[in-house]
Image 1 (spheres, rainbow, N blue to C red):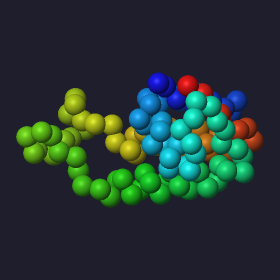
Image 2: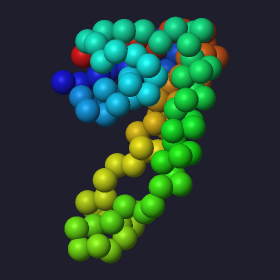
Image 3: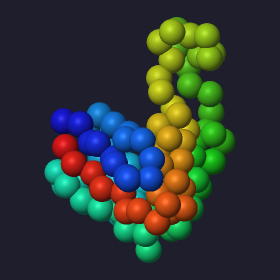
Image 4: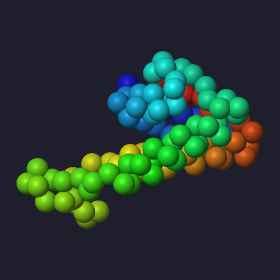
Length: 106
């Protein structure tokens, strides 16, 4: 299942099921097929995701199966939480500026 986050103020963002559910959980939202992040909820959502992103950056460097640290050049490096959340934070910020809710659907 895919989660499509949309706003009339920014481009659509798509998350795969597990990542979308993790994001919604961070925001205190149910992993439902449809929902909304209202203008009133956006400042807290931005703050929550920014904090989670900063915390994830402080976590140890991911390692490969052989125990060596992964680098940005590693083709099989997992997508970090930072990489997943940055576009969502941008979507929320643009939507807040444009005064538009963010909705999602599957």
